[in-house]
Image (spheres, rainbow, N blue to C red):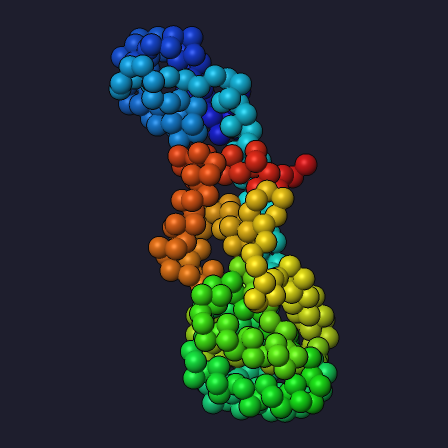
Length: 331
C-alpha cells in the first residue's frame, strides 16, 4: 500500500505490528508476523533509514515506531525531496550545456563543425585569447571558477586589463565565493573595480568561460585541466545560450566586497548551493570540488545544515529541507 512512498510490504507489516504492539522486540515480531528473523531485521533497518522507528526514551536497546502522523509526513516529504532533486539535476544539466559542447568537440576532432575551432595546448590557447582580447571592442564576460588565484597570475593579467578598460570595454568577471578568503584575489578585484571593472562571486560556476563582444566564446575541453585544450565557439545559437547563462548567473551573484546576504529562509548563497548539491546526491568531496573549498569545509557546511534541521541522516535532511522550504516542491 505504501510502496510508492518507499516502504515495501514486509517493512510496512513490521511497522504496523510495532504500532499495534509497541513493546515487541525482534522475537515477538517474528511470532506476530510468522516471518524469518532476517527479514524482520532487514525491515527494521529500512524503517530506521526512513526515520519511521526510533530508540526508546525509557528502555535502552528497544525500538519504538513513530506515530503514523509523523511517519507519513516524513515519507511524503522524502518523495517531494526526490522530485525536487530530479528537478535540480535537470537545471544543473542545462547549466552544463556549454561544457558538453566542448567535450563533444574534443571527442570528434576529425569532424569539421561550423562555429567550432579547436585549440590544443596552453601556448595555442593563450595566443588565441590574446588575439581575441586585442580585438574586443565593447564587452568581455568571464567565468573564473576555482579558489583564489596566484598573485603572479593576477599581476600578469593587469596590463591586458588596463588596455581593455582604457578602450572603454566593459569587463565583467564572475569568481566563486571561495575567493573571498584569498587576499590577493580580493585586492585584485578592488583594483579592477577602481578602474571600472565589475567583479561578482557565486557559490558555483559550471565551467571556465570567456565571451568576447557576445560573438566569440572560449571554453576549455576539460574542467579538470584548462590548459589541455579549448574550443572557440562562434555559432549564433551557441553564443545566445552562453550569454543567457552568464546573465542569469550574474544577476544572482554578489558584488565582491559587499556583506553577506541571507534569503527569506535565513540561508546565504553558499548554504543554499550546498543544499541543492546534497539534494542531487553529491558527496562531500564532489561538493568541495564544485565550491572550490576543501573537503573538510564542505563536510562542515553539510553537518552544520543538518544540525540546524535536527536531521540524523542525509535522507532525513532532504525530507526536513523540503518541509522547511529550503528545497523547491513540484507543486
